[in-house]
Image (cartoon, rainbow, N blue to C red; front, side, top):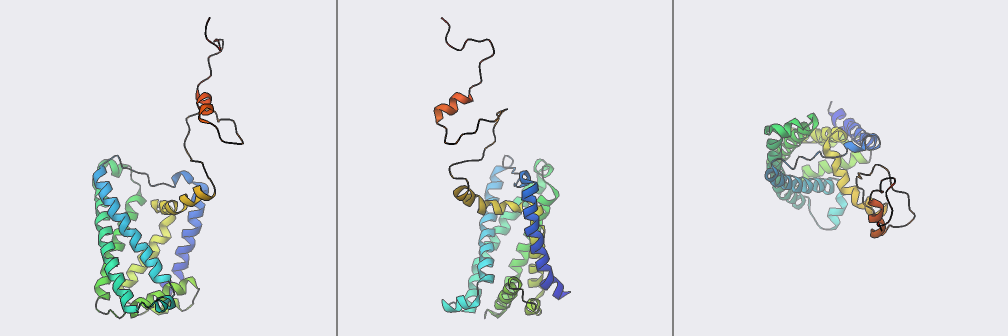
Length: 262
C-alpha cells in the first residue's frame, strides 16, 4: 500500500490534474472562476483573504523551491541541510499560521452566513476544509521536525519529490520510515492535486497565466462583455474614440429626418 500511495498515486493525481484542467478549460471556460461573494460580509472576506492567500503563496513557492531544487544547488551556494530546514520551519511556520487564521475566517464566513452558503457549491466548502486540514498537518510536521534539526528528513523528502518527477522506481522507498504526520501531509496534498480541476482552485492558474496572455497573445486588447445585440464590423486597425462613439449611438427610426429640421 505504501508503494502505491507514494509511488503510483502521485502520477494518477498529476495526470488527472493536468488532463482535467485542460478539459475544463476547453469545455467549460465560463466555470473557470471563483464565484466571488465579496458583496457579503466584505470586511471579513478582505482580512481573511489576504492572510490566507499570502500564507498559501509563501508555502507553495517554499515547497516548490525546497523540494524540487537539486541538493547540489544548495551545497554550491553554501546552505547546509540544517540551515535549510530551520529556514523552512520559521518561514513555513509563520506562513502556515497566517494561512490557517485567514482560511478559518473564510470557512467561518462561508459556513455560517446562510446567504453565502446558499450560493456555495459542495466543492467550494470541501476544498476549503481540505486546505485547512492540510495546513494543520503541515504545522504538525514542525513539532516532529524540531526534534532533529540536522535536515536529514527534509533531504529524504527532496529525494522523493525529485524521484517522482524523474520517474525513479524507488521513490516511495525514500520516505518509508517517515513519521505518520508527514505521510498524511503528503497524501492529502496529492488528493488536493487530484481534485484541483473540479474546484475553484483553477483560478490559481489564471493568476499566473493571464498577464502572459495579455502581454504575448493579446497586446492592446481587453476582454469585456458587450451589451450589443449585433457585433461591430471587423476592422483591420484600431478604432478612434470618435468613431466608437458615433457607432455606439442607435440608428434613427425609419422615416426620421437625418439632418436638422429647417
